[in-house]
Amino acid sequence: MLDFAKVRAFFFDPPADDPAGICSREEIYARYERERLERCLLRGGDPEAEGLGPHGSLIGGADKPLTLFHGFPELRAKLRPLPLSWFDNPRGHTRIIPPAGLEEAHAFFASLSGAYLAGMPNRPSGRLLRRYFRSAELTGQPWSQVWHVFACIHSFDLHRLLPRSAVSLYEIARVLHITDTRRADVVSWINQFGHRPIRSEEAGE
Image (tube, rainbow, N blue to C red; front, side, top):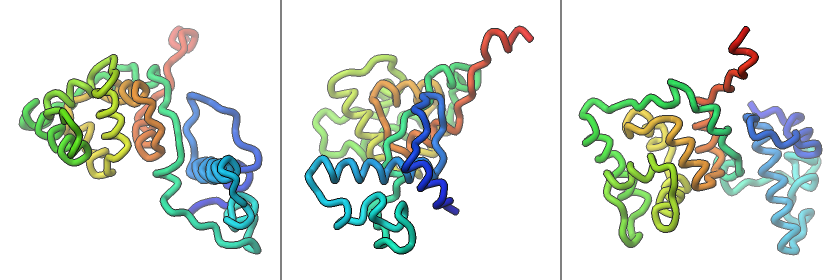
């Protein structure tokens, strides 16, 4: 259940920006509503007429017009992946090889290319798309293609990335950072696997 009191509190008093922070569902809803309000003001709209922010029920309370979303905030809000250091550990660098080996991984990436890059010129093969996902640097068309996969990927395929791709958590997190992917459900998915790095003074205890 969504805690509406927390959503309202986060809307009016958002937490300080923390690159290592993991947003709660309430923070995501508050952030998305602030983004909607800001976009309305930037285009010269009328927040009161559109029932945004304090003018809608989500933030303003039950006596205000019903807040309407045209998509789930979990999908539309912009979040940031945890720092790469949170994935720089033995578990994060482990690649799960699917039962049929790398050929199965290449077939999985071929299905991603076909599903999310159809119609694009020079659409990559599964082997090439997997190479992009494992790359420490991406520019130009490869950058655009990987970004587009993350922008469109369905949860079914997102949750198969680890067991089917033979790509590590660290590599996935790295390519999310490289492509500046901020899609909330993708970021929330990778962040659940992050572990706060052990500080040197803690390691010596």
